[in-house]
Image 1 (cartoon, helix red, strand yellow):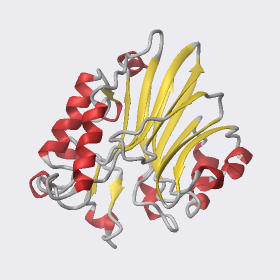
Image 2 (tube, helix red, strand yellow; image 1 turned 120 degrees about the vertical axis):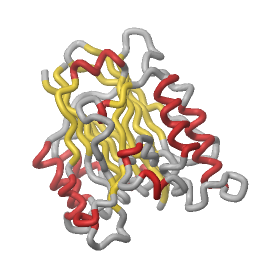
Image 3 (tube, rainbow, N blue to C red; image 1 turned 90 degrees about the vertical axis):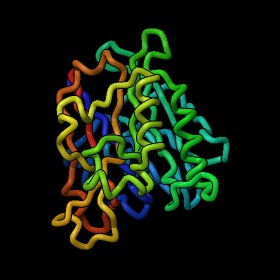
Image 4 (tube, rainbow, N blue to C red; image 1 turned 90 degrees about the horizontal axis):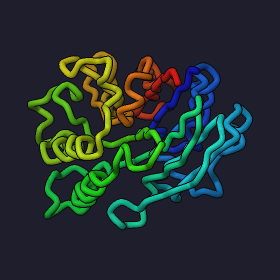
Length: 267
């Protein structure tokens, strides 16, 4: 049984519903996870998603900031949210679904960007980011009996050398500093998570999901970063068919600076 999950930092879901519809009508993922929706729950644009077959929607939003949502073609159980860092941000939501006789816990994350200065002593945004990642280290892929797990989202960290366009030039830039990359890799290790995006793409190959708005020639320059991730429990690794990174979406009309990333499984 084929099954697909897409993660996409949409950078304001109401502003970018036209490209959400464009993507969904063509690619039809079973579950769509959005981050940085920037809308309170009551104003989330559920109607167009339901019109395209996503009858099961859970949201955790805020006015003008943050926000995560899961829209699914199959039933979702639960609507669980955690406040990582204890600052009142809408940055996590999880649910349970069943597919092919398998129970799966799905986490959707939007990790803080962390500001510009990689020093928690003078930058509270960076301090919050480090606290957030520290708490993520407690999340286990095998934390529930008889339940597989998938973790997706904009984690705002490019952990590997070839997850950024220039490892040396990015070492002092937020998203690729050693304290961030080591923290995220430790969260993956402690939680026994698989990095599905690297399962079929070797670590020595470049892999990006984000290109800055500041670069008008973003495609030619290709100074990207892999900020969006899909992890899973070990039992789902052998069932992964492929990961699609839709780079062309960065060039669509009024795009997000992130592109959709879709995992395809055979469950």
